[in-house]
Length: 57
Image (cartoon, rainbow, N blue to C red):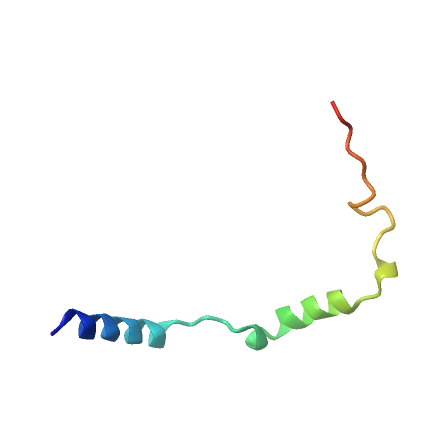
């Protein structure tokens, strides 16, 4: 067996066995994330991390 054929067979077998979750198949987790992004900005606290000032040494 040539090296190229062996490489292709290993790539194909790995691709078949891989179980990567695609963004549209995540279900509940994705829906919760989208709901949080769609929430109005007024529900977030007014004193967010952007208003905190750092003390300089």
